[in-house]
Image (spheres, rainbow, N blue to C red):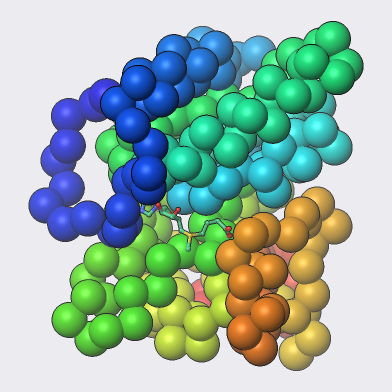
Length: 240
Ligand SMILES: C[S@@+](CC[C@H](N)C(=O)[O-])C[C@H]1O[C@@H](n2cnc3c(N)ncnc32)[C@H](O)[C@@H]1O
């Protein structure tokens, strides 16, 4: 576990009904999928998911794109356990380890801070904790600091992207506010329907399903660096 530098938590509980023995066993099971910086050089493309929840969407994406390294970050132990269960079951059923998945239980901000510059092709922030109460909004993950860290980590390629999904309109406002304030990224949506259209690589997440059950709808927000967005979207100027 890396040293904690952030003064506020972006997450709620870290475990639910898991006893000490189960947690100890989980730590051992997670070691099989521990991330090493040297893993970055083994794959042409690298995707980092911040707050992956139960990790099952990442698991499906990893199966669909074996040439990409998927690094999942989550502090909720039960979520980490769900992903390890899925990976172990996969290995039991196929006789092969899914070798393009790595897992970290560290606070994603600490994990990101320890990564080298320009090493990630996509950062995913999918259904981040919305922290709806006004006094709790400071706990939201999508801040200018987070954006600066994503800028540092994303490769200098026009394919590099920061991808946010949320069902919370107020969170979208925060994303756009921070994007405008920081001026590094810009959304690449062209048509109004783009905001409601999942990308080709998308796999549904647990919180997306929960939102749908509760009549909330997804906003998909692909963000690229300003100059790169202009290359893929000719309606955009080079400045947001
Ligand atoms: C609302 S859930 C969404 C989970 C998943 N992305 C989904 O769509 O089902 C947000 C998750 O982010 C995790 N999280 C929040 N802050 C985090 C941090 N600093 N580091 C790692 N995970 C974090 C929480 O524990 C929680 O599981």
